[in-house]
Every structure is written in C-alpha cells, then in structure tokens.
Image (cartoon, rainbow, N blue to C red; front, side, top):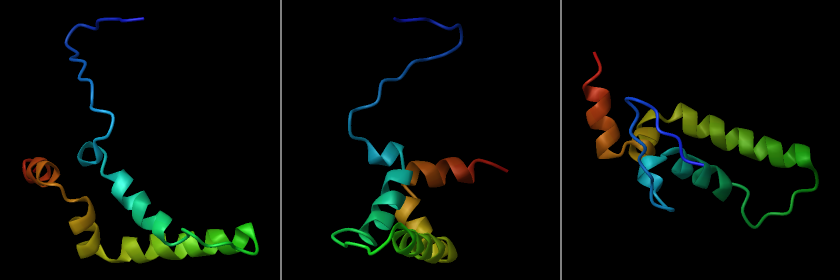
Length: 80
C-alpha cells in the first residue's frame, strides 16, 4: 500500500546503510563484548553488556569517533 502525504518526501534507503543509522556501529561494539562467549547465566551476560555500554558512554571521544559521521557533525554544528 502506498500513501502520499502532503509535504512529506519518502526516501528509500539502501538495504545496508550504517552511515544513516549510527547506532548500528554502537551495537556492533557492544556485540563484540559478548561474541563467541558462552555465559554461565543470563545475568552474567547482562553484566558484561552493561559494563561495555557504560565504558562506551563514559568515553565521549570514542563515541564521537564511532558515531560522528561527517553529515552528523555538520548537522549538529548547524544547531544553535
């Protein structure tokens, strides 16, 4: 079903476009913390994930490098 909405432009994205969805890179980094690991319990796996998310969140420079595509930085610079 196709519906047109006045003033709305539908832009179809390519099937793989991580530069348009920077959270993919973030979750890829989180996934690396648990990849190829068998955890004795779900709680232990959650602890590892939480520790990785906290480490990433605390490292602002690393987050900027990871998620700071040029188009995002340009757009953010335009916001006052």
